[in-house]
Length: 276
Image 1 (cartoon, rainbow, N blue to C red):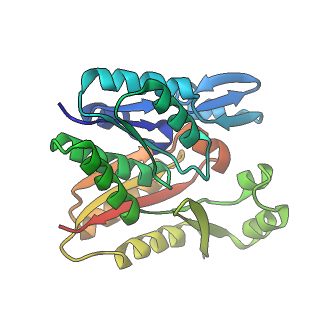
Image 2: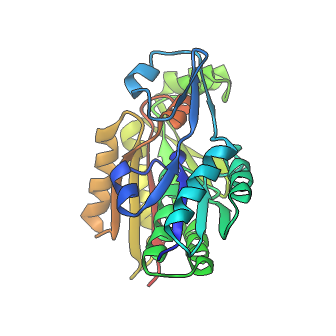
Image 3: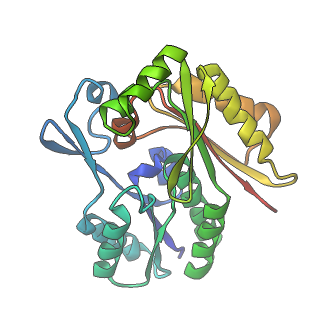
């Protein structure tokens, strides 16, 4: 029997992919107009019409239940992979839940989120499917954490201004100058990159960064992600496929928790070059 894998919904793994690899997903939570709902229970179009939206991670008991269910199916242990602890209390909840569940369980902070987190989770799942022991599966995840990159852009800063995450003057300047901010999420933090003049230039900049990171002879794993901007994410994935043959290529949508913080239009590319 294989090591079991658990993650949270911040990884934005498509449900069919998670099911195919026997990955258990513990959902994040939103509070919309004072009502708590699990991520995925409200359509994005509906969420975008609401102004009173707060987010939170899963409770320890939810991780405990997921670990116990996965452990019931395997005698080889469980590896829990969470969104960066710098972004959410999810990691701490997973540690408490795993301890309560007992058994051979490890909890690992991926130090990232979204598509990059998904690639770490899939690396661990691949190791589990190969029959590796828990120590080796954890090491496979740690190698992936060191390799993943995630670069994204948003069409404007309006939503982040409303959330208080950037000053209003920055949003005003962005609108006047048609600036598309670029960000890299790495080692638990969001790092601003040189902005682009418009979304097409930002998409080109993302592809350029992916291209510069290429490792000759390495296997490529890539996820193109979007928040209500599927065409832009598909454009990124198509450009990657024009130049490479990925071992993993996914088109996914940011979850509603991420969307609540960034607003619609976010598009990004996560990748990992795996040396063979």
